[in-house]
Amino acid sequence: MRHLYGIALASAMTMVTFFAGAWGYERLLRLPAPPGALSALPAGGGSLLANNPVLFSLAAVAVTGVLAGVLVAVPRISPLAAGFPGLLFIGWTALYLTSVRRATELIPLRSYAFGAGWEALLINGVLGGVGLAMVVPLFVPSRWRRLRADDADSVASEAGDFLADVMEDAEPAEAAPAAQAHDSGPRAASFSGARAYRPAMSRQPR
Image (cartoon, rainbow, N blue to C red; front, side):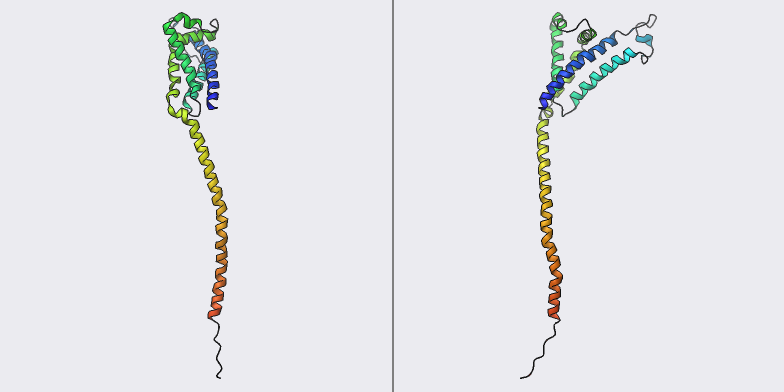
């Protein structure tokens, strides 16, 4: 079940990368530059904090990066969640190295910012680098054994709870004989004391 969720998360990660990450990356690549000596720098070399399109683009790229980091780093998430998109990115980059035309023709919505950003990620090598980082969980054995470890922990906790219940039930049963012995002790002592202090009856001479 955990791996099924991982496949669903892998699909979501791919869609977020295409529609958010690629869109934001494309918008950041074509920042407007005013004419002048510093025309090669966005915003004329000044601050970009007042530029709302830049902030939106950075937010889209940041959300994509945070989601990818969570899928890679969290041990409870299936490695397929990050591994499948990573394999897709690496495969697309390998196809680009062998045939640029075929790799670019497979990009959907190339006339929109999403497709143009994906093409930019592919050409600049960013897609391949991100893919290499995302396939790392596939080679970590503990990520595949996490579900079995959780089952073992749950069985151990259930066994501990059962033993605790048994001990709680056994304590009253052990306390009852001890209480009876405690109550019978003074009675026995008083009875033996009475026998010890009973005066001896004098014998009459025959």
